[in-house]
Amino acid sequence: MAEKNMFEVTDSSFEAEVLKSTMPVLVDFWAPWCGPCRAIAPVIAELATEYDGKLKVGKCNVDENPKTPSQYGIRAIPTLILFKQGKISEQITGAVSKSQIDAAIKKVV
Image (cartoon, rainbow, N blue to C red):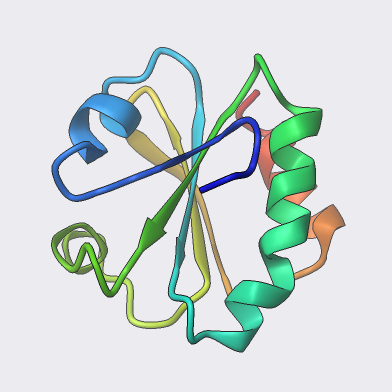
């Protein structure tokens, strides 16, 4: 993943990178074949830059990492989940506007 300020979340790294993070974490559950996922990817990258130092932004490819999405009951992608202190704070499903994602982030940072 080339985007600055973003990291890849895998089934094996999820607990350490997301649940044990001292900083709030936004996880984008996505897949390369998903059109809406590709549509919001630039927005997620922008937000990662805007909130650098206040929010970690991770992307979890649901095809390569099936355990974590099923653990959180993710049935549709893209799904964005904001975690704060290891707990789900906000959840957004679908390609939504930047302002809607930003509003959710503002509640946790």
